[in-house]
Length: 207
Image (cartoon, rainbow, N blue to C red):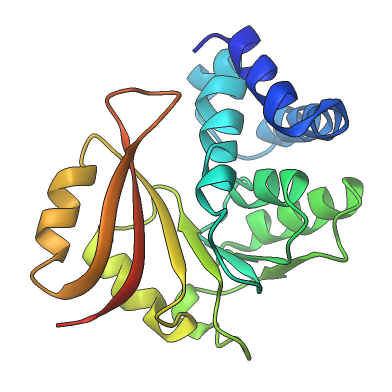
């Protein structure tokens, strides 16, 4: 997927106004990347395909999720959390333990006008205890699947939809997780990297 293809995909699926807001996030992200290592410098030239659309593709996969918050674990640069908040009118909780990234996420959310829907939780996911269970859980390059489920289990219930980009290891991580967890597991091919997969899971519970 080229940068032009990526922008066109956003415009087609979410409209010009959301694309414009995503362009503002592009500027914010590039600006902050000069101060801290948010994303690899080698990926700046392919920011839309490599990061923005790679995050945005999770939104259509959450169409069947119930009402409630979307919890993004290890949000870091706001990928996918802030991208989802830009494209979807749903409460977002961005869980991030690193102080400089917490500050960035809060400042970016405010600059994008999203602070009323976006909560930044400055802690590890194990220390976050929501009043209501998450409708959606996402995590991008955070931990191996089985460990990730274990660390976030207290934030979820049987209706929670898990959307977890897993790269080339998606199928192998699902197979490994099945020894400890039962539920519905499906691997969806990534639209930005055809050899990568996104794990979609629901009804997850211990064996």
